[in-house]
Image 1 (cartoon, rainbow, N blue to C red):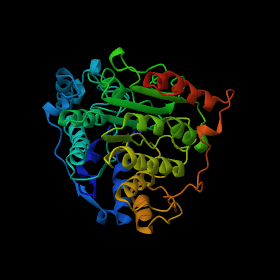
Image 2 (spheres, rainbow, N blue to C red):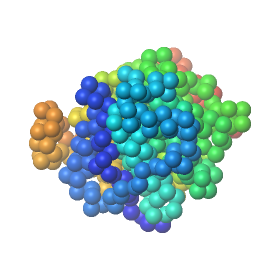
Image 3 (cartoon, helix red, strand yellow):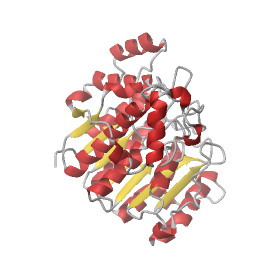
Length: 390
């Protein structure tokens, strides 16, 4: 197996553009790619452009009638069929929508293929992580569910155990739905509580179908959760489940919208904590999955201050050349940010919260604490189903 990491990238993915008033601004992808380059990470990874996902690949997850509806909306955006979630406020139709969505999906599928076949140990597609798309409809800024497609392709190639960990602020509902009945896939989502955030799913009681009980795990975090609570929740649930499941591949989704500056949600997580979870996922892949790690992007709507730095850290972690949090952001990149956006870019690769401190579950828990209540609810719902102590 090659020890080299792959970065999946095609400049055309920046065409995933819902319009100037939509929060999913593709400049976040372009700026991330430029920051990766500014740090010289191109020399540490193999930059690969995979082919778009074809219809047979898309059908691994999506219904044929939905794929045809996306194609039709791509040709004539004004005729988009709202019954499929297309042409809505969240998912406006635009010309070329099918082609660029299939391209993003193709990068995640290509990442999964490279890792499974041993062409790369780790592979990153920060343009991916579009985890809300359902088999028969668009949802939450997501047209095709590249994360689900990557996992489905791994299963098609012969994988028998895949763990998917989603730390986006929103519930990874589309991936959970795709594998609800499949015991070969363990989906774990840490997200803001459904009472206060889209998509209003991801309750701890959602644990998988009867044929796959305990294969869906949901940690519903109270609004306002910060670094210490977020990391406590992650480490109190994820490592024990991964160790039990022993995946052949770890697939992770790193939406940056948990950040305290994100305009669409209500958690209070720093860039430093996001980086800490990236490092933890990398370590879990090596400890339990022979290093096989597919890492995806996701949400993130602080498109200058947060997203590029967070995902550049992700690429650096995968490349084995971590960027120290206190590192100064290259001046050339800051100038490009201002030229593109007229915004001032951050000066360092930290929010000033490094090292992030948190307490492990083994230290005991407080039954009156809302964060601990969320962790305990997830553990009690799933751990006994997997033969683990809650």
